[in-house]
Amino acid sequence: LQLFCSFAQTFPWFGMDIGGTLVKLVYFEPKDFTAEEEEVESLKSIRHFLTSNVAYGNTGIRDVHLELKNLTMCGRKGNLHFIRFPTQDMLGFIQMGRDKNFSSLHTTLCATGGGAYKFEDDFRTIANLKLQKLDELDCLIQGLLYVDSVGFNGHPECYFFENPSDPESENCVKKTCCLDNPFPMLLVNIGSGVSMLAVYSKDNYKRVTGTSLGGGTFLGLCCLLTGCETFEEALEMAAKGDSSNVDKLVKDIYGGDYERFGLQGSTVASSFGHMMSKEKRDSISKEDLARATLVTITNNIGSIARMCAVNEKIERVVFVGNFLRINTVSTKLLAYAMDFWSKGQLKALFLEHEVSSLRYIGMR
Image 1 (cartoon, rainbow, N blue to C red):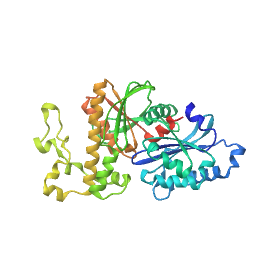
Image 2 (cartoon, rainbow, N blue to C red; image 1 turned 135 degrees about the vertical axis):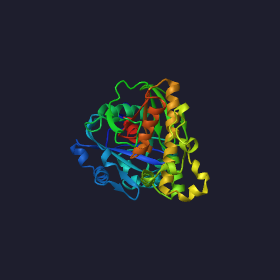
Image 3 (cartoon, one colour; image 1 turned 30 degrees about the vertical axis):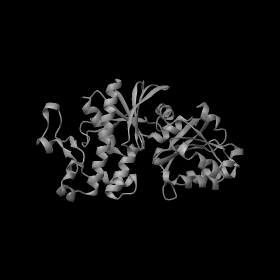
Image 4 (cartoon, one colour; image 1 turned 90 degrees about the vertical axis):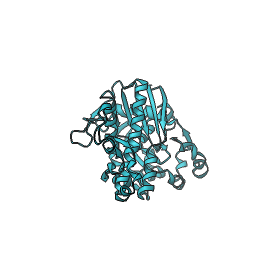
């Protein structure tokens, strides 16, 4: 808090999480502008540009549904806006900052993520801006605790799925909750790749393990297999597909359940296992391939998370990350995996705001 506020004496206030796939930008829009601030033309221009649009260029999006209203930060009242665009467009963003003369208002911008290092020289040479780099996992934990404490515009930030044992049924419903006494918890951060943290207090955590098979893997494989171009398009395909046309299930091998070890016939025995058959390959759709890719990545993450939780003797698993944005299929699969393989001992928790906002808020 003290660190961010030392850089937040003048507006505009920004935080950036520069990831391997997406850049996530959060803007604090003050509602208590002073007379002096109202007269600054460049400040008015930036404020109007960001709050009057929901799309910027071809790829920038402001997620209006995530806006946090009437917050008090660093003694000022206002709203938080959440904006995202592909990391491959980062240089265009920096050039826009130069064109809007951002350095006349600020010389330092708070940033986290790997791109805070990768693009540091570009910010300095193109836009005359210095990056105040903060550790992304420190920011993540601090932000998670903060956003849970303030809630989501009068509603709890955290949620879980009731009756996760049947994720396709109407009985599997979303329920809100609060992270009271949250420690210890296993925090699973799903971005381009995945990091898993055992968190014992807000200042005491360790990275237990991770996997390179994350959201970037899902999108990359979907682009190769289906010809899609965006994460949204890939998820839309996956929602319409049937992964059992691609994956070999336990019942395809045993003719039913493998009762001795409690493996249901619908359990995936071999991801993409049917694709060794030319007949199967010729009959599947792009939607089936997208769904199978999503299930493969999600099951792998769930399996590793469950083993980490058992090894660390942690019963609460919190999943965050941009991979889970608009991705109900994966959240329900993760909830089912935690419940089934732990025999009800592990509960999967999720947040309305994914990791970008948590990291930004953690800078404060």
